[in-house]
Length: 538
Ligand SMILES: *[C@@H]1O[C@H](CO)[C@@H](O)[C@H](O)[C@H]1NC(C)=O
Ligand SMILES: *[C@@H]1O[C@H](CO)[C@@H](O)[C@H](O)[C@H]1NC(C)=O
Ligand SMILES: *[C@@H]1O[C@H](CO)[C@@H](O)[C@H](O)[C@H]1NC(C)=O
Ligand SMILES: *[C@@H]1O[C@H](CO)[C@@H](O)[C@H](O)[C@H]1NC(C)=O
Image 1 (spheres, rainbow, N blue to C red):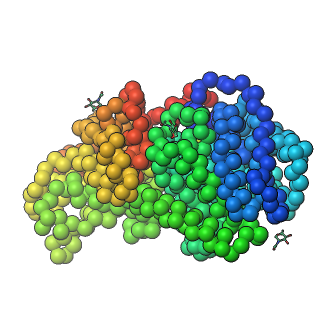
Image 2: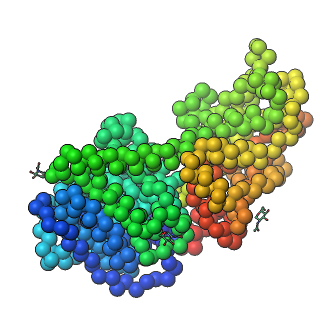
Image 3: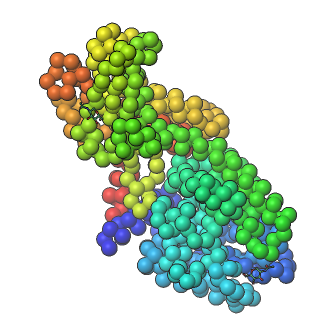
């Protein structure tokens, strides 16, 4: 129970720490928007849950744009935007077990709509649920709270600048109704592209298991280019957000068109031509999302490739395998005599007990087995911001050991771990989508590669458990410092070792896509940032 409460508070903190710090008086009233234009088609209703701290009137323009786009497609759509207690829906819906107050607010808003002529039909066919930001998280919880195996409370869900569960019965793959995930490229907070990649992977999974048509119509995941998180609630500037690159009218129109297209694909009253046009729009948006997020997925694959089980059942880290070649510092011809197989260890205890070794092959080559591991940022109840590894830990053989075994001398000696960090950034830049790279190059804060920090006394467990990759940002750059453990060939304990914790290329991409574009404030230690926020609020 205590855990639940703590987790919910962190959730509030994460979505609303980018929102205003004062506790706004909750004097909102339920907003009811009648359908625009006359229509003979059945009445549909959209319940729109507002984001944290945002007065509900800031969603009126977005809701009207959705209605207008729906009306063009013969969808007779009502919208209610409930007023929620303290403008923080999470207080009224902390978990699927405790969500009655938020359900009550939504029902109260629907009652107002009934007073204005809305005829309630069958909820599982006519009633749609939506939410922005924290409102999207609440909508997801509300849906689950009122679902039963025999009846669904809503026809489907639309989350904007938000997402459904990361795993389980209500992740994107298993969610029992259609879900539109509508996020934006310039989201400075939790629904940033790097985080959205979690549901993008699930969309891809559905594409391969159920086909492209099914995934597009039922579980589209869209990142709209050049919009920011604030564009969903114009007039309410979300601090910590990124600057939008389209004007608000364009953004509002695009959001309206996207949501309406998703609805069209669900309506049995829509014509074949309307459905084709809707599918074409979503398909184009999904294609753009794909080129934006494929680089991030590829970068994550460098952290760990679970399918490469040559020497560890838990896979291999392609990054560590490459880094071993780098720190060896051999000439090209000698490097060609090295084969590296990495063995990945999910648990840091297993990393502790893994030590790189080698076998001489008959043809004068050697096979090196390195040890890989990744650490991640805290993600309590899905509130982690950054999905990339916070560091890639690689246990490798030293250049001296490799040279000794190859009976040669290194071409470059003393290659520092920071070379691996430079490599991580260059990989991120090579992978990045054109829009990411151009924006980063013209507006982003870059990198400062600092000298490696030696682990005290070369004590292995200290390197494994205590010393972390340090990331610290200031107005100029993100500074990165690797912990290193290095032993000579004549040392007593594990001689000839070179251990580095490296920057992940995916972490570098997240920085390029999002935080590098913010004006750097005071110097901030990022490795502990998320944990610190949690502590302050619990
Ligand atoms: C986000 O975009 C809106 C609309 O263009 C703008 O008013 C707002 O200032 C932007 N937010 C930031 C942090 O630039
Ligand atoms: C649309 O679906 C509803 C609910 O299932 C059904 O009652 C109605 O007959 C359908 N209309 C058409 C045109 O298929
Ligand atoms: C060499 O490393 C591999 C992978 O870590 C391990 O399975 C193997 O037991 C090690 N061999 C020796 C001789 O230590
Ligand atoms: C930011 O940190 C880097 C690396 O430590 C340093 O070179 C730079 O001067 C710092 N910039 C500011 C504005 O403090």
